[in-house]
Length: 135
Image (tube, rainbow, N blue to C red; front, side, top):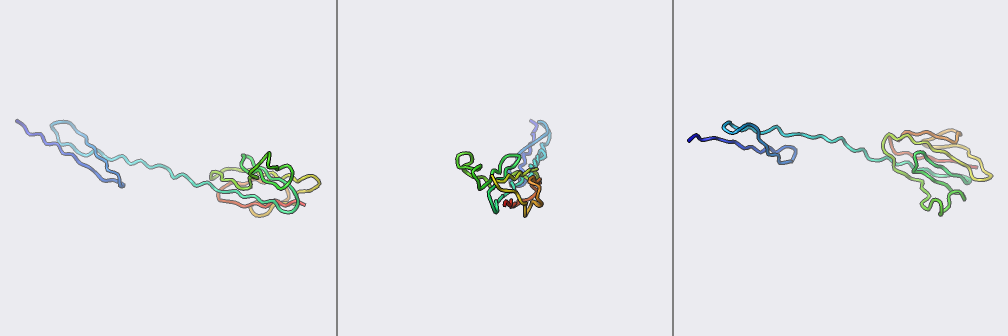
């Protein structure tokens, strides 16, 4: 009777116990190459925070997330959370639009946005803070 030797191997790879074999009966069996699967890192979301300064007004975002204000347009009925902070996926393009309350004017942005145009475009490559000023 022929003795058939079968070798089984276990390989410790990256803290995982992987056992495998290849070959056929009657031959030495060699360990199968462990399969290494690399998953891409999932980036943490980045925060956009908006504050309203001066008189009354609102700031809303596209895509949705920010709906922040200190006037009657932002009531606890339409927006109970008064969302001035939102976590966006890294790299998201966000458009903020400032609207003054009745009888007031938008005077400009500070921090991550600047200027007096009521529309501000941001790329969320890091967490950002924006102030909207009304008079």
